[in-house]
Structure formats: structure tokens, C-alpha cells
Image (cartoon, rainbow, N blue to C red; front, top):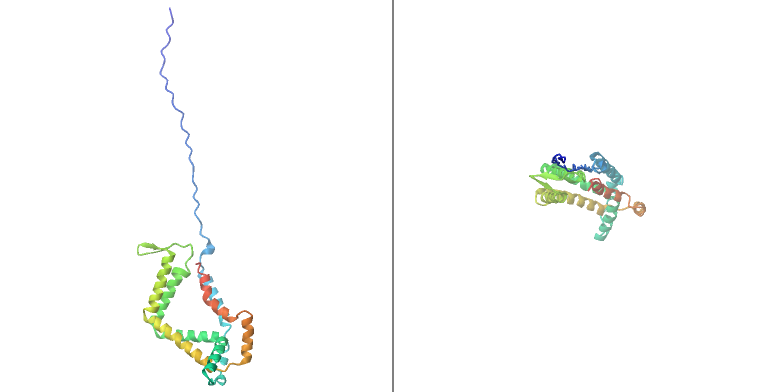
Length: 225
């Protein structure tokens, strides 16, 4: 009698478990360079140093106010020649004279002084002293780019200077100081030996004139722009 084979049991073959590989992505955030931030104290130190070097070229005020050196010019050409020589020799003193005229005029008009102070503060906070990699300006529910911020500052400056009484006050004070400087230069007799020394200084590199120019240009160098 033939043997009966056992029944075949159903066999289910399970698929091999899929191997899952997890890749971790590393995001590197840029770290702002500390040197790119503007240090207000260093900025003011550079400004004061430039101002000191500029003022070092001023002539003695006793020499400027020497009444014995004043006389009436012989002609208009003589007055122009005197003014040209004296403007070159007393340029720092005349610049201080114009600045003194402007300061006195602003002190006599507190509104103009407050408007210019607010305008200067806006330029320093929003542009000159703001880090180059700082966050954009956000106001009135939107974000302003650096170009839009600069355009707004320029527009505000033009409005304050040209469309208000501030511009008239400033221009009048500067014109008064310049007129006094030109009148003094035309009536003061230049001393030839003094201008020989001045010619040596100009040939040697400009001296105090470059320092006076650097007083206004060093500000932009410290603003990170």
C-alpha cells in the first residue's frame, strides 16, 4: 500500500525589510564679522583726530587781527590778489570764522538748530553708523532696502534745507562769514616772507589743507558703506 504524503502547508515568503538610510543635513549659518560693525567710539575718535590735525594748520589769531597790516587796496586787481593770497594763508582761520558765523546763527534760531540736529541724528543712526550687514530698516509695515533708506534721507535733507527757513538761515550765515573773510583778505597786506613759507608747505604735500579735507571725508570711511 502506497504511503500517503503529508499535506503541503502554505508558506508565505515575506519580502526583505527595506533598509532606510537617514541623511542629516547640516546648515551653516553665516556669523557676522565683528569687524564689520561700526563702533561709535572709534568713529568719533577718528573724527576728533582729523579735526585736531585740521585745526593745527590755523595761523595765530593775533596775526589775523593785526590792525597794522590793514590798508586800502590800490585797485580792484590789487584787492583780488590780496584776497587770493590771504585766503590761501589763513584758510583754516577763515573756515573757523564761517563756522562761528553759522553756529551763532543757529543758536539764534532754535528751530533751525533742532531740525539740523534731528537730520544729523537720522543720518548717523540710519546710515552712517549702521553696520553694513545689519538688518534692513522696517517701518510702517514694510522693509526698506539700503538704497531706499538713502533716498529717503536725501529727500528729507532736501526738504529741510530747501523748503523750510532752515536753508535760508544756513546760507545767510555762510554767506556772511564768507563775506567777512573776503573783505579781510582784500584789506590785509600780505607779507611776502610768509607766503614763501606757505609755498614750501604746499610743495611738500598740501599740509593743513589736506587735513581740513580729511575732516569731512573720514566720516564716510567709518560708516561701513
